[in-house]
Length: 387
Ligand SMILES: Cc1cc2nc3c(=O)[nH]c(=O)nc-3n(C[C@H](O)[C@H](O)[C@H](O)COP(=O)(O)OP(=O)(O)OC[C@H]3O[C@@H](n4cnc5c(N)ncnc54)[C@H](O)[C@@H]3O)c2cc1C
Image (tube, rainbow, N blue to C red; front, side, top):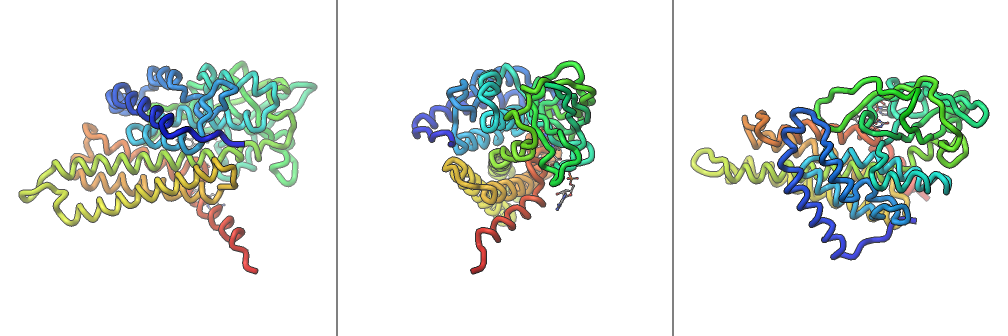
């Protein structure tokens, strides 16, 4: 069962609120926060007030209960201005979705209201130093002792790893299981003794949001933290949220592609060469023509995937196509926008260099674009089975 659609005027009122916030609170601080890699604590407080930490969590648990389509449009708007801050609530919401879809009634009642308010924030801890795409190769283990589990292992690249306080943690409860996924379980792992941050990872872009290594050293959890209460479901629970995650990454790609286009369009009309605005040179027009087409196509693919998700239909192919196309559009538009900005593109006094640094992450996160094309193709062949 998916969240119900909003009335058009309700949705518009929400967008107006987001736009006001972006104009008054976000735009003025983005450049300095990004350059100095400062965690945006004040913005996080504002995001709590806006309800973003509960955006897709059901209203019964204190969330906004937004459908994927409205949520994607919000992410597009924010990413047009500053993509990185969407990471603070997105992986948090994927963790919440795993609890809402697969958790026991007690887990939902205990955790979802605290996730929705932003009191407890976190994300998804899947990737390890030796594996990302091949998640079934993880080595973190949870050994059962009575009604407790003892967890050992290391996760890396975990978004919100430093500032977050609770993570959906993928482990092996039966390391010898065949097929491998049958030995995997997902736990709700709050920070406490035995769970420490190894290091902060310095990055090319996606600044301000903390990416960290997390180390589990005889970390003990009561069995009530096993999501769904049954071992062996973790792989399905962790990857079950990826459709929504991919729609989110696609929406971030759309925002970046549109933002890079917006900056290029403004600049091309102001910058003059050979007696006229550069927008009047055909070489620049060709670029803008391609950029606007790419951005529009990315938006439409993303909304198509979100609408399919909201109808409760299978959408791995649609989400994959949206994620793949929109992330590549973000990379291409930010590079073309750099070219249009000429030498100033290389200056930190202009915003476009941030889009150029942030965009490539969209091709990696929530399944690399290599994997997306394979997923799209497999599903396409399945749906087009020869008679
Ligand atoms: C900024 C940032 C934030 C992140 N946040 C999180 C987070 O919050 N939580 C989390 O768990 N992880 C997170 N990740 C990790 C991310 O999900 C992984 O980096 C991603 O899944 C790729 O895994 P990998 O880096 O191990 O690459 P690998 O799996 O080693 O892949 C390397 C290359 O091989 C290709 N490849 C691998 N297998 C195949 C195959 N079967 N067929 C074709 N090509 C293949 C890949 O496409 C890629 O090009 C984050 C990463 C970054 C950079």
